[in-house]
Amino acid sequence: MSDEKIARLTLENERLKIMLLHVFPEKSGQYFICGGSTELDRDGLPKTILVCPSIGADGFAIYTQTSPYSAPQW
Image 1 (tube, one colour):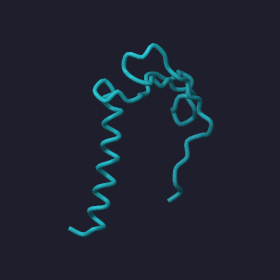
Image 2 (tube, rainbow, N blue to C red):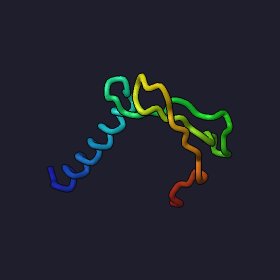
Image 3 (spheres, rainbow, N blue to C red):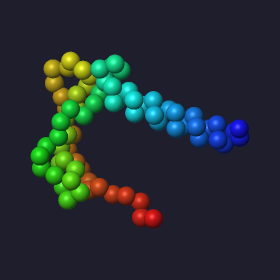
Image 4 (cartoon, rainbow, N blue to C red):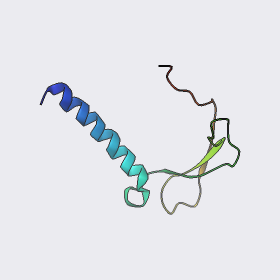
């Protein structure tokens, strides 16, 4: 296996590990999105989301959308 392929697989593995930490916060203790506003933008994304620091926390932080959805122009 080439060094380039190993480097690519290592990066992908790290990305997937981070995703899993946030998908299973009850096991990892990581923060997670615990809610969102019913007010949506034109792309269907909530204007605000609630982020809980960990399972069992008493509170949450409110994050507000500051820019519209954008994607690369292929």
